[in-house]
Length: 432
Image (tube, rainbow, N blue to C red):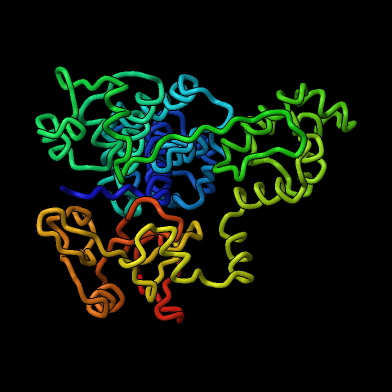
């Protein structure tokens, strides 16, 4: 049985930026440098792109596009991609959308990651100077998992492959269950299709499966979700909450006495929540009949995630062993001496895992890189000190568990998604 490593959100966003830039370069060869304005990168010097000589043009460009400058929050595809990630990885269905409407939202991404074909596109990804090391499978992996979950939530039949994706198990292991002797363990399929109810029955109780959670938005004063997961949720929350209260953006603007540009700004927020000014949170929260502190916290966390996390860390003690163990669900298999803080502020700890064939419980380390997340590429290390030495001093990646629980992912100190590393409470300098 092979454990599956879900891509990080940072990898998905990095690849999406690279795809956007590659597509923009292709578009620029047809319409000129103005194409870069579509991704918020006006060109200060001509690129001179010609369709007949794309590669040479890229190499002699006087201005090098920067992936990090592409503001995904301002692009519909960027907001949808994050919502797709939350749905696929954590089972959080977008607020205010039915599964069929959400499926329509994903159609643009579906075409983008499954049908995108261009000679320039592949030249771009073959050139590390421009692609800046972006992965080329993370986005497809997340989309594939999202589609499998949508099939389950919409009552459709699933393929055995989709059932394997949802269970986070190796497909071969799942196919072995088609002939299992135990009726409870056996997965029933007909011509590779699994009935929706059968898929739900079989997935129920599987450790790697996370049931989908749906958030209902009503009109009860003061009632709100625990948290909003992404900017798409924020926009949908505004629209759905106002509707539940018998309001519309236009009527809210009228109640506030906002006209002209202020009215246009307010009416744009459901579709463009990234535009909200934090200084308006208090007044907007009153129109939603929710507390200003809750709403402001959601907006600040979604617009400025890293800054908010740093502020929280300044007043927050590190999680205790008991707290982390309880969240991870396995108190005896975590190394809390070593802590990775990711760019999203979450904290991860090396986790021992049980080899289903040998029954050995050990930390799993690997050199990382392509193919590094497979069981075959990993080394099982039972000694905690040896594992720490391999990860901290020799650059190995290790399987880790989040303080929030859930799946176990592979990280290494020099990874793009790792912001800080602490060993025995002391910060360790991360070498790129």
